Image (cartoon, rainbow, N blue to C red; front, side):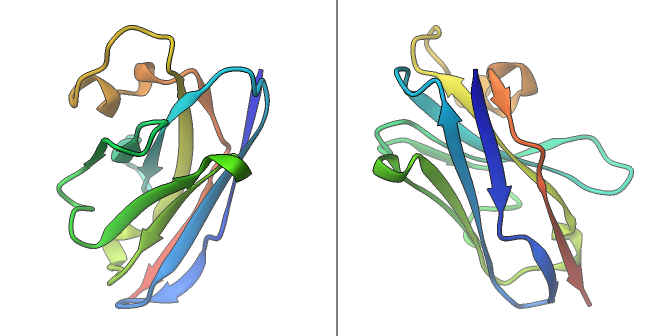
Length: 130
């Protein structure tokens, strides 16, 4: 089992920045690609960003591209989501998710789906006021 714990959320004003962190523990003998998702009030959980274990391949949702940056530090078992120029519509609970690298080949489309991931964190709340 892998435990994922997100942190760094909070209440900010439009235009502000936040950096979310997601730290993993547990089954460290495996390697994981990582994703960030979010779920706004009354909305379905949606893809935000993805990064491979090596960090060489990164995908963003259209809503995140240009404002958000995903990165990782494998030595710390931590993935980050730097969010700049936040908007009220970014208000959501942000979840990180882990996909075992031993799973079959992924595509840009598959890693945007909830079922592409093996483990999920409980989330951190981000609220952006106007």
